[in-house]
Picture 1 (cartoon, helix red, strand yellow):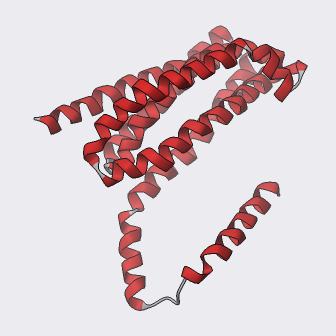
Picture 2 (cartoon, rainbow, N blue to C red; picture 1 turned 90 degrees about the horizontal axis):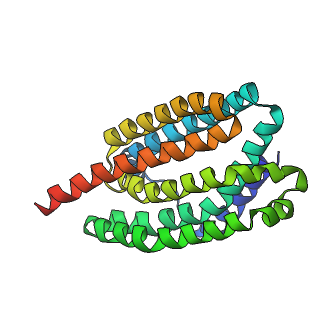
Length: 239
């Protein structure tokens, strides 16, 4: 109910501020709208694919944790994901609001902006996560409760994976900027298959810690694949 109400409020507030810009539909504008919709269909398909598959894989991993470890361990895994989502929001917002528009506006800026991000933003992000890791025993009771202190054993692999994920996001956003639909699906399917395989093996071996180890391993592989792919594209452009 809360999610529904928040969505309704956001819609009403947005509508209030843009209602003066909305004019009556005309045949000409309607046709142009359909053309624009067709041009953005690829973005919708790419986003929809990840939006559907990602939660299913997450539920699958959580079920593995419950079966191979315990229900409490699944709670710790859930808590670690929530903590990760909070600081990853900063990176994802930066990429979506700044880098994606810049990439789409001028493809010649993709390579220098990507290198700038990897050499400046990622080290700062890693430093911030290092501080959080060292102070995790203080942050966990502050944001959750003392009962969640076992989550501290999940921080290392989760944060290492988040660094690889943050580095991968700047590369992955190029699929949208360049409208590389087919390569996007190929790399996403490979990453999802890697996540499932590693989770199945590592959770049976290391319990709940295996889930974050699989997460880290998946994004390491994903980053390496994307770097090799886009580095090849940059070389072709240079030639």
